Image 1 (cartoon, one colour):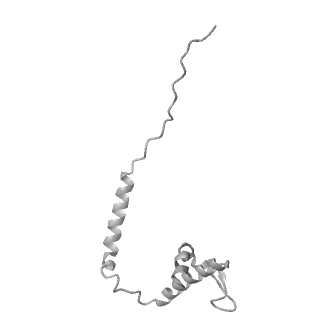
Image 2: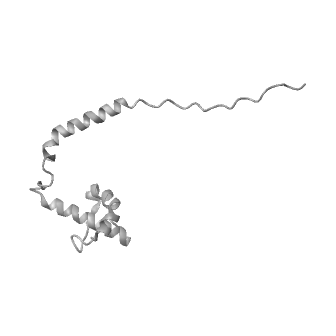
Image 3: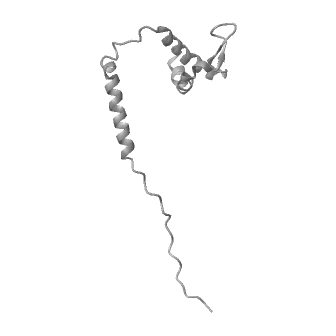
Length: 114
């Protein structure tokens, strides 16, 4: 016995509703406002200000930016090196906060001619 039925209509997948982003945007705005309130006085004269009282950190961070770019270029280990505190060397894992930015910015550092 033949069945007389029309082909079924194609089904559309049911997509979940988009999340409400308003609370996240409000939290981001409040965080930005609080951070500007706390540190806005530092943004007044950026070109005329400098790090004072701890110039060693500035030199160390500059050195890390250069060294990690050179290590990436030459296939060396960026986490241990003997170019500082020779001949014993230094374990760079104590200052990992600069490793990712240094490796990400390595092409820029190398193009700048460091």
